[in-house]
Amino acid sequence: MTLDTHSETALDHAASPEGDASHHGYITDKDKYLNRMKRIEGQARGIHKMVEDEKYCIDILTQISALTSALEAVAVGLLDDHLRHCVVDAARLGGEAADAKITEATQAIARLVR
Amino acid sequence: MTLDTHSETALDHAASPEGDASHHGYITDKDKYLNRMKRIEGQARGIHKMVEDEKYCIDILTQISALTSALEAVAVGLLDDHLRHCVVDAARLGGEAADAKITEATQAIARLVR
Amino acid sequence: MTLDTHSETALDHAASPEGDASHHGYITDKDKYLNRMKRIEGQARGIHKMVEDEKYCIDILTQISALTSALEAVAVGLLDDHLRHCVVDAARLGGEAADAKITEATQAIARLVR
Amino acid sequence: MTLDTHSETALDHAASPEGDASHHGYITDKDKYLNRMKRIEGQARGIHKMVEDEKYCIDILTQISALTSALEAVAVGLLDDHLRHCVVDAARLGGEAADAKITEATQAIARLVR
Image 1 (cartoon, each protein chain N blue to C red):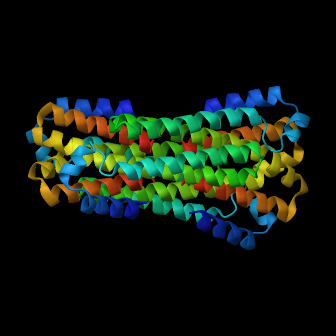
Image 2: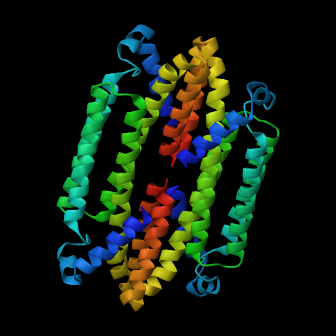
Image 3: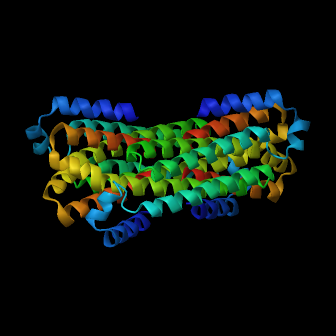
């Protein structure tokens, strides 16, 4: 996932100049995330169907693991964008604003790491 | 989550006698899982909408953490049912069948633990 | 980690007949776990040293991730042995004893999955 | 863990002025981390002893979960310090240096989130 996240990040930055990025808010490539979330919704529906059809438990668990990994990849990507834009901007302003942004980001990371 | 899983498991077992459980295949309370998956699909749609509306990144990450926890609770519940039915049945038969079921369950657990 | 766990499990079972396994209690290959835990203690000391020497934060985090993965592999291996021996034995006895063992195992899995 | 991380961070910042922090390199409170790592080494030795003494599997798993949580708390704390110092400094310089620091931090987070 690390390499994946990295290469995507690199690509986004090749693909979207600062201006474009700021136009999209903190999200470097909004369409990428919308497509990923569409896929994730489809995976959730698929798991619902598997339970409905009483598919083999282990196969359902495999799909749940895949969905969880997909969600984690989205979370790490959004966090990368957040650090790259909101946190970097706050850091330039410095002071309490920067401290507050970092604390907020760390708490989000703690929730993801669990 | 442990206590939650535990109490639910206890309830299921109070609520559904063996016969009922076997009628539902390995799933002790199918409707419970269908409802949970419906909620999870709704959470995924909600996160898609948050990205669409460019909600604050940290708020999206909080929802992703909540969705991941909900999926983990479903996975642990299904695994509990699987151990309680498929694995216990295989254990009674014993031999390679039992060994294979345990190996399969352990691999599913390894994917969940990561 | 799944394949790793699997192949090790397969090996243990080739290497240790039931009698041997029961002589070691629920642990199929005690020496394997003692060696792994020794390595893990060494990894923990190494991380302490890295903080002491103020090594680069990211390098310390990489070592913490490696240590966490090593601990998860030990946990999954022990859980496999536990299911293979304690839970299977309880399943053969059946009734509340089996139910209690499964609930206990599920709660341990829930703590690992988090 | 979130609140815990937060309050500790707050405390560190009350307790250690910038000058002190920079004297400790990127680590806001080095002694705190050295003490935590000492405790973690003790926990690892304790788990080795439990395997040695063939303690009940579930009790060993409980200790492994506790040790993993302790490591995650250290990782999140170090990451907080890293963002607060290295990343913020890089952000002020801006350009590729800042981008590279964020990518490096995101990859470390991806390894922790898994």
